[in-house]
Image 1 (cartoon, helix red, strand yellow):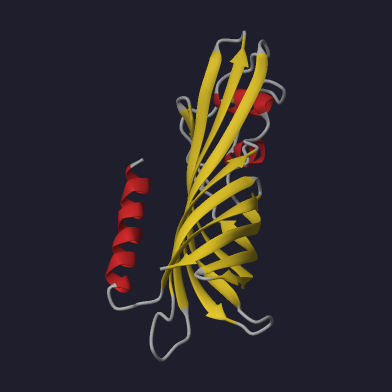
Image 2 (tube, one colour; image 1 turned 90 degrees about the vertical axis):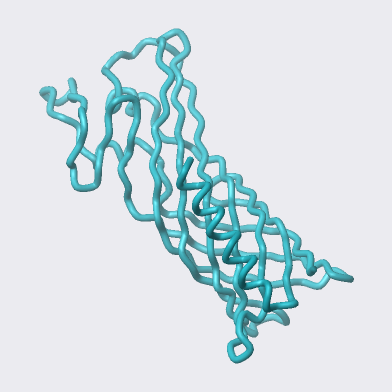
Length: 225
């Protein structure tokens, strides 16, 4: 939680400080597919510098995700029990910075690229099995994409965008167990289906759908201040 607050403060501070020297600002909200149903409020500063026709966008997004394979998550992070009816849910909170570079395919199109940070949480619950646990990770990434603004009248534009984000592997933590990309794992469980050999990060990563490859297709509105 501290990381989210710090990133949000830094993003907002950068927006305010940069915006003081610019008159063309906009706010907006996009929604659509982001490897799941997602929504993304954002701020855009147009014409970031006088010499370079580039815009800066700062955004925070929320996406509902399929968290992974419930039975494997239980075996890898808790125990080999099979009782109870599994229920699962997952989401990510994304902090995004994009440089929007005008690109004249349509009247008002652009390409974009920038860094990403995602805070992911998966929840697995076994009704009747006395198990309810979270698995979390925090992932840095990069993203690219393209989009276009369609004038709707007045200060409002319709925006259509598509893109692709890639997030780097991070430690997966759940219950009292964690698996790291370097396999410096804490309290790894034993696989009773494979001579009780300890599970590895690869096993955990295959079971849990933490952000990694994230195709995006979003539609939204932009209001020019």
